[in-house]
Length: 242
Length: 242
DNA sequence: TCAAAAGTGTTTAAAATACACCCATGT
DNA sequence: ACATGGGTGTATTTTAAACACTTTTGA
Image: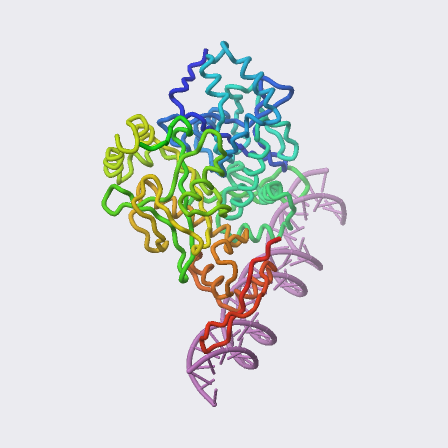
């Protein structure tokens, strides 16, 4: 039996995280395969301790799924429909899944608590995909990175949550300079461009893109990156910490 | 004793509303004076029924404060600091206020429920100020419109909530065409301009502003507005419903 | 006919986009 | 020397801001 105690947590309020990563020119989301249902997946999520802030809860949940501290994260929306879980098209799967957990990891009271209606706070997080060591949560059998364009079936309203999260990321990518959180410490301009293209789903002209990014004055030019390819070596850049 | 029953509501989760209005060239917010504290005010707010969506709860709270249905409203942020109420600089006032309510309108259990830590969902609403008949809520002695530049002392973190609400309004004013919700059914271009100036806190050139607004193709030009003033009568406009 | 304010057209500046070209690299 | 992709400068277009002027209204 788990040490999870429902009295420590705020009831009917949960957090779900859209964890974004970037690799091979693709924007990716970390999704967890459920122990129940047929190839049914979900977003990493959890509950809020009565003694911690909502932001701290999100950071704690992210640490559990990724192993990382100090992740860039931002709340983007509350999902408060009264039927978002109980009338989900996967409601039968969810019911079966909870029944499986009964007497195994959680007692009946805990299961009832979890099966209740929940208001969900959506967070998105941006991580350097190379640093992440993904770990499935309480209800996950496995966890993996999936391209935003090729997501599996997500339970509850998690597909809606992802699309709102992406929308928020798009808005903030240009306003705040958060995109670099998705890249390793050093990167080429082409990688930045491919990242922006992946997020926005459009393509940009290299020269104009480079001009615009460099005019922001947030990048430091380091040496060149010699890959052995028979072409001019691209510069490496680093995000200036202010 | 009130008919308020804590078992009907989600615990530790509340809604606060920044209700915006526009009059005499000023952006205004509806604030309620508390029955306790020395000239202490707050935003209209309330709790969420276990059976209703969060959006419906916000609409219900707005109806109670303004008398209006079908108000334009949007959630903009969650305020989830664990100490946002308990460590508020008005915490002593709040404690006294709750004590006053004991045995009067609410029983001890209800007071304890209300005095708990709460996570708050911030909504902003846009109304035609002329249509509103403001009514103070459960804890309000009175309610009135105050200019955004001249707000009284607000309890808890309600000043923070207002400033985030204004920020959200600014962002959405240009992206979505929501500003017209603050105006009466017909209005002059000058009023639209003054509204945009009040929200953004800057001034615009009339000719360029008019050009930009009319290019949006969302306004219908009606007749002229003759006021008796010895100058050219301005056109009246109306928002096109699509 | 005059003052006050509305409304419109034109010029100028700035920003975004498109086009053309040169440079470094390893075979 | 050459193919490959990186990098930069200039021209063009589009958009935004500034400037100048005409029109309407009631005294």
